[in-house]
Image (cartoon, rainbow, N blue to C red; front, top):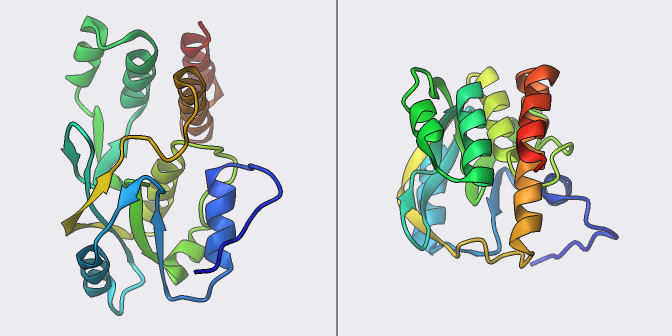
Length: 206
């Protein structure tokens, strides 16, 4: 294993890109440090992506309290609004109402859960890698959107990784929430306009 040490913490996207471009492997795996993946996960990914450069593969993510699909439905503006309110103020009646709105999940595209994903180098490079304007959070959603623009599919593997529940980086909960807000506002700026991004930023500010 070759470890690359950076001089400063420039964020997940910058570090992940640096690692990806430092190797010549035809298939890349991005795996969070708080994940445990058995050999069957890697075998399933190799089988699903053999000879392909038009798809990204993801396993199921077993978190401490639930199991989620690695292939997640696309983000809409309504879903972004819901998530900012829920994270900062809790799941109340407004959040439940928003979650029932038509188009809450954008079924026209999907994104790969960033805790563990496999992607052919050629596809990752063609898509421009992770957008290094994201320090942490939402860079996987943004990547999924750009993969969809290239007509690439997100393939759900019949395999599972254990996710340690955000134990990879031990930071205060308040700092983690600030980073989550920052990622969502950045995503809104890029894909839903500055006015909507300012609204999310105002909601998150208190």
